[in-house]
Image (cartoon, rainbow, N blue to C red):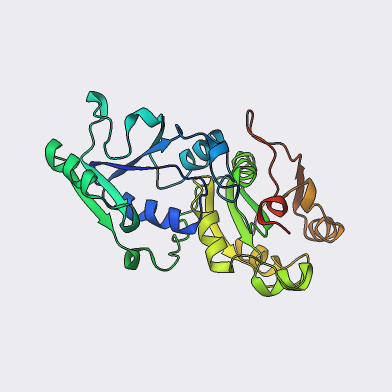
Length: 273
């Protein structure tokens, strides 16, 4: 792995697929250190931008597989410079094209820091991480869901589920979500949702379901052969319980509780329907 220290900086009011694609591309340059700016009062921002608290953003980013560290920075740091700490001096400052500025370029030139602009063409598509080879020897845990507007509650669910073994997440297909939830669902297409899910460091592999109904993950279950089918309280369904009884699969239901210090979140509230 490249041992250079790559810094990225921003407010990260929403953390969506393009944010993660940027982090993935930055990680190809070295170890990614996120400076999370939190000095600007959230109350002064448009409501549609204020989706996640500072603590939530920190929690989601620190558990992204492409990120090494996250540090919260106040507004006094300035948006055109990086803190030059002796213990972790930046080698590279990576920015998206939309955040490129002459003042940032000048700062890097003055301090001998490489300045990298990651262009929109580099952020296209949703790459898939390879299946783990060889198996780890741990039990296999499978969870399913829509994961349409990703939030801290999803990360917490994956964190808890991964404590029981290697975590496989089956993301509902677009067609099946329309079947179960109606037109207008999902908000984000299946490949994008899969990509966001697989970016969480607790996830061993994310796949898209190929079945239908509440047991749309049945083909994936047959292929993965999990030891545990785990759901949260909202996902508990008789069809799932019956399937596990019939196939000798352990069925577990977790309480829906946020990470300590974080607010409870529901995708329905965030996406507006």
